[in-house]
Image 1 (cartoon, one colour):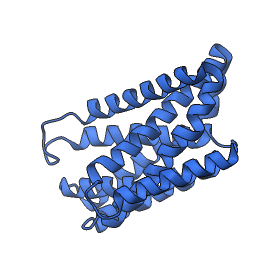
Image 2 (cartoon, helix red, strand yellow; image 1 turned 60 degrees about the vertical axis):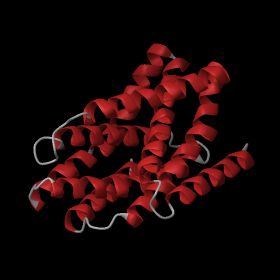
Image 3 (cartoon, one colour; image 1 turned 90 degrees about the vertical axis):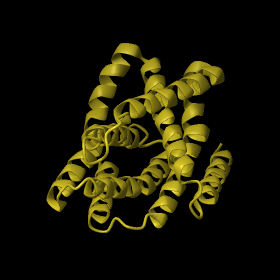
Length: 231
């Protein structure tokens, strides 16, 4: 739970910065790119091979891709609105961010204790959580919410990270008892899919900003090299 609480506090710090500052986002984009590359690499070089132990490489790739599509579809469904931030987009934004936070908290707890991924996932999510919180706080202030409401809503959403980490061992125990190894493969598929989606989600919209693509690619290469050295 320690990592989950640290991630939650980091994200809440991002919310505070976004609410109170919220003007320049270049540095935030660069942090997100590094975190996205690390999470993308973890999914490809650590989580997918673990799924392959149960389902084989073709099955692992299919499950990871399905997880990515599922997370992307949920994100698009929640964020699909023609309203401006001032007239109704805050609800979908909060819902989508809550889903991301739940997956973050679940992932950091589910992958804890595994060689290398314990630290790597925490670092990758940490680099992602501050920009996430920053963007959330920035958008809520742009939507004309008061500072107090923006901070309260942002903190409440980011606390979902800690809640998911708390629930994970209990839900995981029931799932394994019911479905055995396939429960673990399915959970890892959603985790890897969420990491892949976060990587795309960070780098594609921000690709024209200074340093974003090189940082993403460089972090991905380093992650691959570390995974190869440990393999």
